[in-house]
Structures are given as C-alpha cells and as structure tokens.
Image 1 (cartoon, rainbow, N blue to C red):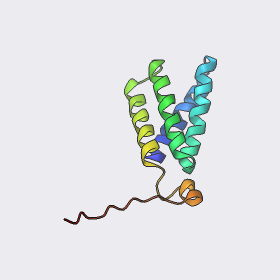
Image 2 (cartoon, rainbow, N blue to C red; image 1 turned 180 degrees about the horizontal axis):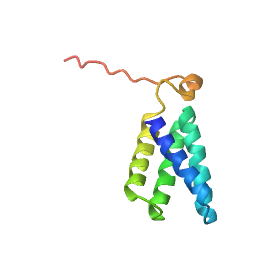
Image 3 (tube, helix red, strand yellow; image 1 turned 30 degrees about the vertical axis):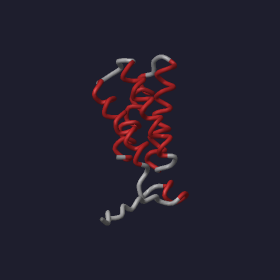
Image 4 (cartoon, rainbow, N blue to C red; image 1 turned 45 degrees about the horizontal axis):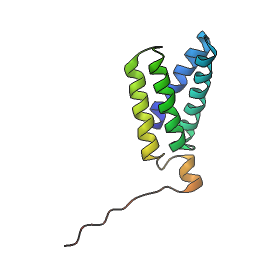
Amino acid sequence: MRVGAAIVLLDHALVKLRIGGPIESVAFAVLGAGAGILLLAGLWTPVTGALVVVIALWNASARSGDLWLYVMLATLGAGLALLGPGAWSLDARLFGWKRIDFRDRQN
C-alpha cells in the first residue's frame, strides 16, 4: 500500500510541477512529493498517511483531475494512517514493529 500510494503521489507531483500553475497547486505538489518520499521510506507513516488524506481531499475539491483517483488516494492514506508502515520500513527499524496477538477465548 505504501509503495502504490507513493508512486501515485510522486507521479502526480512531478506532473503538477512541470505544468506549473497557482502557488497553492505547486505547494501541494511539493507536499505530495515529500509525502511520497516519506511513504517510500516508511518514515512517520501515520502522520504521512494523514497528510496524504489532506492532500487528496484538497486536490479533489480543486477539481484538478480525476475525482476517483483522489478518493482512492485518500482511502489509501487513511488506511496507512490506521494500519501503520509494516515490517519493512524505517518506522519498524527505528521504533520496532508493533504486532497485536489475539488470544483464543477460553470459556
């Protein structure tokens, strides 16, 4: 999920930066590129996932492309913010990988 969302963010940011446009559009493209790089590395994933949701919702409200792409990207960002980075990430290396074990119910 991290890699897929990061690729979409980086691609979208590069296209926006090449085209140019209003300062808000360029600022959100730079934020999107930064979020994509952080997602690729798996660093600060819950915070970055929340940032991805904000960026995707802003792009969806600006009507600057395919609405459903931004809905999918916001959903991926929310999922990453809630699920975390996974075992292969800098977050797992730096802070440890959290795993929840459920016990069987004993009646």
